[in-house]
Length: 207
Length: 131
Ligand SMILES: Nc1ncnc2c1ncn2[C@@H]1O[C@H](COP(=O)(O)OP(=O)(O)O)[C@@H](O)[C@H]1O
Ligand SMILES: [Mg+2]
Image 1 (cartoon, rainbow over the protein chains, first blue to last red):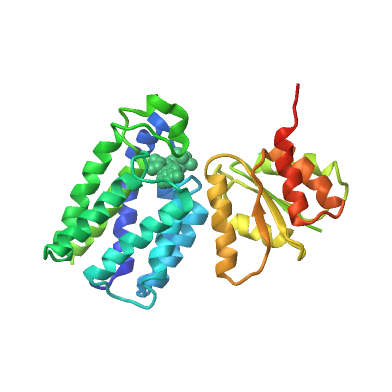
Image 2 (tube, each protein chain N blue to C red):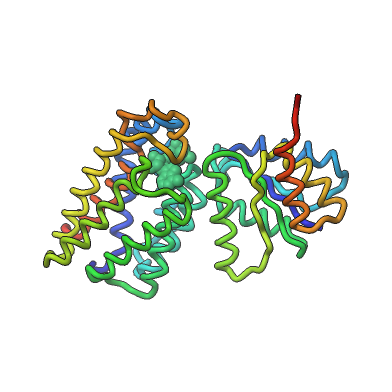
């Protein structure tokens, strides 16, 4: 990845904020109507903490993660917060990421989300977007794609993952209280994860 | 004395539970609420919980009681934040309801119980029948 972690997180923040109402609406169906509010509040706080001088990817991800842990408020706070912090640990001191680094970022983020939330694939969570995206990214890389190509594959897999969440019952998080009634609705956290990945891809392509 | 932190999505609940539990042990120190977000909205904030753990600890460790959903995840994240900072605080999360658990924990802590004893007292509150 070319430099510019500040610009990349800015774009994620912009996209999350632009989709605030959609995310909140999705959470109204199977949760407590706050996912968009939570995420937008978290990223607003992140953007208040970061400056264009933040160029060390690891340190910046850590700063962003700590802010999300504190400001998001809902389950997505400790989950995304831990994901960013774990990704920050393996990118400390770097100002650019190779595709291999990006693969490691995916894996660290997933490990962080699983350490915190103890969910696996198929439980109707953000993992249903991120895990297939990570797998597709690695596979496409292995097949010889560059960063942008591999991220395209990751976003496509994330989109399919979001669609898949409509077909399954939630067994983690607030939506699990709904049981069978959670079927037919797409998971808000999987949707925000897809939006995040698309922002990263668009940032890379826009460079 | 073992410290106790009450984590809730709502600052009113966290403070109310502390008020109630404090009546069982007048003058108890180290019973600290960590409710809601800094701006007063509902939710849990790992940094706020970490600060409460530091405030509650007198060197003997801290037992944390947390309400629903993300409260446990935020409490776990708070413990890790303190570990990452290199602080050595024996902080543990009780698998217990916060109101009953807090009352039992406070009584045990005020009586000089260890972290393990306070944790057990909180967790045993689950067994108490109400009817
Ligand atoms: N244990 C978990 N593991 C992974 N993701 C989870 C878990 N619990 C909840 N989520 C994700 O968090 C999203 C809800 O976030 P949010 O509405 O901000 O929090 P809350 O549920 O506390 O209101 C869900 O859509 C789901 O994707
Ligand atoms: Mg919610």
